Every structure is written in structure tokens, then in C-alpha cells.
Length: 243
Image 1 (cartoon, rainbow, N blue to C red):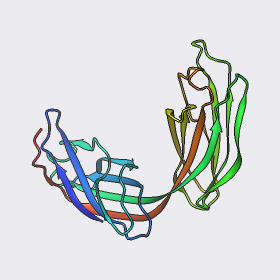
Image 2 (image 1 turned 135 degrees about the horizontal axis):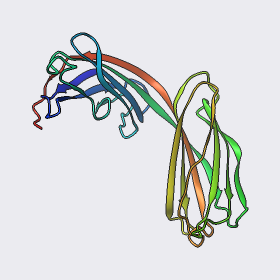
Image 3 (image 1 turned 30 degrees about the horizontal axis):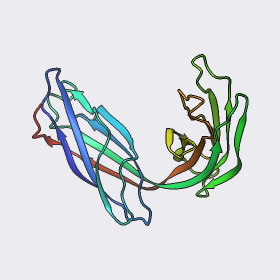
Image 4 (image 1 turned 30 degrees about the vertical axis):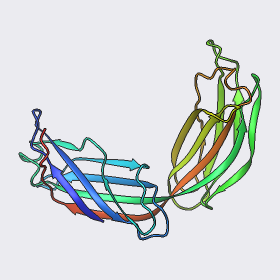
């Protein structure tokens, strides 16, 4: 990993000094990278932490055997000039990056319950890349709420079957009407310690009964498995950007 940018700005009117960092990472694996977890700790000249941040980014994509460049640590990395000894010129950053590949599985189609009190199910357990499994999905329809809208409860269980930590297990549900047009979607995710499980509860609100006649959900699931880890240290230069 190469640090391609680590800059600080002059203090603003509140005395805050902003830091920005970007890195270049080579993906030497045979897998595409679809999640990047980065962190940055900034210390002053005494080696004391003054600020930092961490970030999960699933918008970046690095193809197998390719190189990607991206910002690290998220936004709002700043410290007061007094904590820095007057400016950011003597600061130092410790940067860490972990890259993840994605195991993606189509779980199936789940009918929308057509009457109050109905339950629909996906009655199967599906393996997710051999490291986790989805243990079925259910949807229960309560009585309509006071506004006459559908009130549903969705439950989907995922279990980490491996001995390793999974940074993110994710379920995505899309509600499709009878003409196969998407009405709503919901994404939920959770971190999984080894052998741990979690019940997802995707939410859908404001559904008029007429809109969901003969509707259904498409259900997919993903787990993100670590590929590589990178660390670097850097000293900043003064940014040319003005306030």
C-alpha cells in the first residue's frame, strides 16, 4: 500500500486543523474487492493521539490483479491546533486498510402475505460461500395500521459457520409488484463473530394494500470475507486547498 496523499490545512476560525489521506492498494488476489475497511490514527509530535476515524466503503471496487485508489478514514478528521502544537506539520498518521471479497447468493422469492394473519416462508437453508448460511425467511402480516397500511414482520436468520470473524453479513430484499416493478427495497447488515448468529428484520413502511396485491420479495444475501491487510505511516504536507 502506498500513501498517495496526506495533507493538513491551516487552522480555521475555530482553531481546527483538517487532515485528508488517500492511498493506492494493489489487489494481487484472484478475487474482486467489494468492501474496504480503513482507519487512520493521527498523533502529534509527542506521539499522542489527537484525532482519527474509520470507515467501511462498499462503493469502491478493485478488480482482481488491479490497483485501486481511495480516501481513507472517512470524513471529519480534525484536531485543534493547540493539541497539535500549533499546526499539523509535525503530525503523523497510522493508516490501516483491510480488503474484502463478496460471496453473493440469490436466496429466492418470498410471496407478500395477501391477508392479515397470513405467513409466507422461504423454507430452505442456503450456504453462503461455505462460511455462513441463511436459515430461511418468514414474513408475517399483522392487522393493517391506523392509516390502513400493511404492517408486516420479516425475519431472516444468518449464522457464521466458520471459525473466522465475518466483517459483514448482509441481506437485501426488493419488493416487486405484480408487474415486476420494484416498489421498495431494504438492506440490512451485521458483523458476525465466529459461530455467531443474527436475525435480520428488514423494514417496509407505508404499503397500501392495493399496491401489494400479488406482490413478492426477491431475497439475496452476501458475506464479505477478508482478502488482505495493509498498514502504512505518513507525515503530512500543507494542503494547497483554501478554506
